[in-house]
Each structure stands twice: as C-alpha cells, then as structure tokens.
Image 1: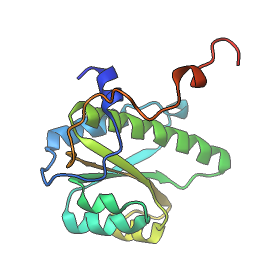
Image 2 (image 1 turned 45 degrees about the horizontal axis):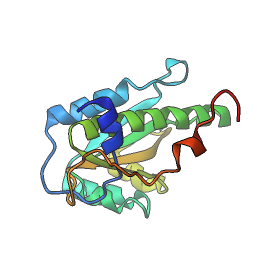
Image 3 (image 1 turned 180 degrees about the vertical axis):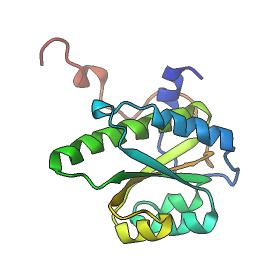
Length: 171
C-alpha cells in the first residue's frame, strides 16, 4: 500500500476478527513506533506488547473507553518514566502521539485495524503489565483485523473541508 493509501484507509477499528497478527507484522508496527520522531531525540517510550486473551481482558479495565482492547489480537501499551515537570510532560504527550500515529499507519499498511485509548487506572496498569516504580502507562493501542470490513481508502471522510482547515501564508 502507498503511504497516502494507508493514511486515507486508517480509521478507528474497535471490533476485530479472531485472526492473530504474526510476530513479524507486530515487529514491523513496533519498529515504526520506535522510529517516530521525538523532542530532542529523547525517545521516551517503552512499548509493552500484550497478546494473551486473559491479560488483554484485564488491560481493557484501565479506562472505560478501552473495552475494545479485550477483543484485540494484540495491544501495545505506551509506557514512559514519570515526567520531571509539566513541560516534559507536554513534550512526552506530543512524542507519544507521534509514535502512536506511526504505529497505526504501519498497521493500516498491513491491513490491520487499530483503536487507541487513554489510561486512567494506573494501579490496574501496573498490576497487569508489571511496570517498574516510576513508570506510567499513558496510552494503549489495540490492533486486529477489522471484523466489519477491510481497510481501504475512505472516499468521503467525515472531516472538515480542506479550505476550512488550511490557510496559505496567513489566516
């Protein structure tokens, strides 16, 4: 798939088939996240990959909007050291957004759907993932093959018109 096709095909997928994702495809997705840009090349992330069904069901409890995690083929937890201050926290959020986007696009390129979620219950996250002291689970990205329809470029996306979003030279 061309990059522009992957961008136009990517959508939030929260219902998955039972088909597993191969280790090589997971590694390709993770490599995309690892190569994402970060502030001052700090690469603040650690990725925890979960594929075991019972663990996925427990991981889904980290936030009320993460129910789809329980039914995914694999979910990646994005973990960082607790930020030292508010400024570093903001940079980390931006950096994790980059890694998330790269992984989701790499998945779309492979025909694999994805759906991200925030994390609210750090105690549950630490229990499920065995995080060391001083680390936080910030986001989870569930991956799996879409149960409803395969990924393909979306011809009429639900997006604001181009000319309403893009300004050339000045507002």
